[in-house]
Length: 266
Image 1 (tube, rainbow, N blue to C red):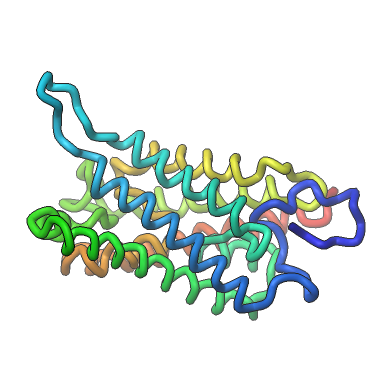
Image 2: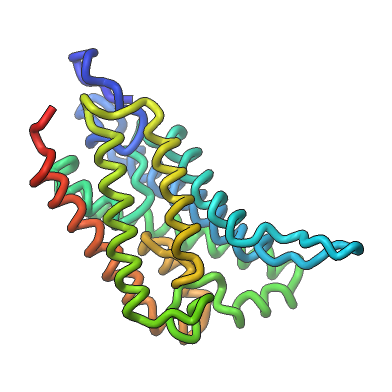
């Protein structure tokens, strides 16, 4: 929670708000919070996609998989959990595009962004490494199939679930990341925000996945994309630049737009 000395404007201090004050959490605690939050996000979302999205059918033909809707909810629910668990410590970014968007909006210092991003990248890779360890320890054929299938990586063209090309992926990643960051900036504003910010942000991420899983398997988060692609083989890794560059473009654009339109307007 924020330790702002003025109690009136503390509406939105539950998650993704400002840099922790000097008397608040240490830098190490902030980085650990980002690492853990990103770990849970990637473990929950990518894990749901790999383990449960297409689990097959029961004896009577009923599907046992959670499908696109279930995977979308998994990503959203992990953000809700992380925002309320670790948001008061670090702000609960769990996403380099969000961190850079908040910096562009003036919510955090640019000097803090490298530590945030490094922590997020480590958390994401640890999460997919955990998934690999589970497969290696318990079901080697499953792991082989998961890696050969791209390991829930993002992709366009032949790697797109719906056959969408690179142009569609670029537009989707810029626009949806920008929408995500704009909503984050709105619901975490010191005076206009809401104590339910974590819930709103998680539901927004769920909606974004419902829209764009068929397009490119939904990134809007370079840490998620990198973490999956390193185990997804050469083709997803070759397309990874799209899912690093364009979520960042969308996040920066949203931060600058918010600052231009709404900064200082209480």
